[in-house]
Length: 351
Image 1 (cartoon, rainbow, N blue to C red):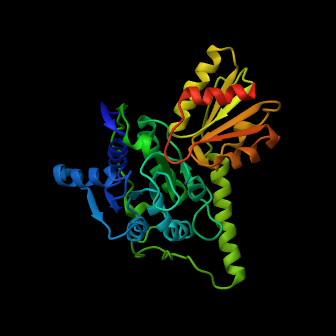
Image 2: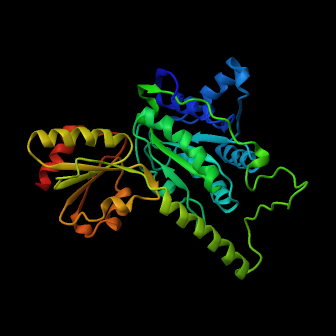
Image 3: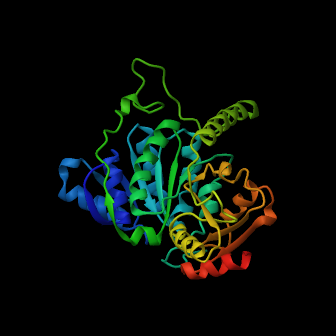
């Protein structure tokens, strides 16, 4: 790790991406992610030795496809957007998944539907985790809950994208994006030489040509193609589950939350324990693959899922537990975040 600084989440995340060897950023400004392209533009001007290039696309559609093109040639590239922009990029996400293109996309969630508000929300869980484009594909989805973790998972996202030749989504929210915290920046990494990147379109002199395939030649060929993709997704699901547990050894009630609201739930858990209520917490870090293993063997426990949405991750929790009747949901909409005391009141209803 590198030096300790006090930085805004979006800016720290952008710096971490640059240090991960991502020198290419394509984006269209959209709140609450706009500090990411702004940071890249500033580095391009003030630190020319970094070799950073930022291009403001005419739309999010263009930005996503620019990322696809750059990553297809073996370079590390990314974009950052909010929910409305992520929606526009779904066709490109489907194509990148089909084409084995190792890309990274940051989505900073804000309330919807439609244009919505510019506060914090978690209503884009479905579009990120379930895949908003067409077809049977999966994106790795990582959800940080601090500025420090935003930096760490940013670096990890590029490594995972490269490892599996697959898109990775870093799913954050407006609270994390705008907050400032002390963070230890990661050191610099050398990005892989594009000529050594598997499947990269670098010319075929001296090797077999690589073909980008995103459409089928009959049902038999396309089924074989999809079965190969499913084998890759199964490998990811078996090896890339990430979560954190808190006070699980004696918990009767288990909070489940991700992102910024997990910080609120952590405080609510402490308040509950001060009152003698045995509360633990599961914080999913990988939203896909979802950490089903964290819920195994938890029979007889009560689960309270807290989200800044009408209830999306709660469906995956119900699939993971032994009895979905043990799962209760509490959500907030419109960009308001509950206080720890509000969550504590929901905990007391389960006692």
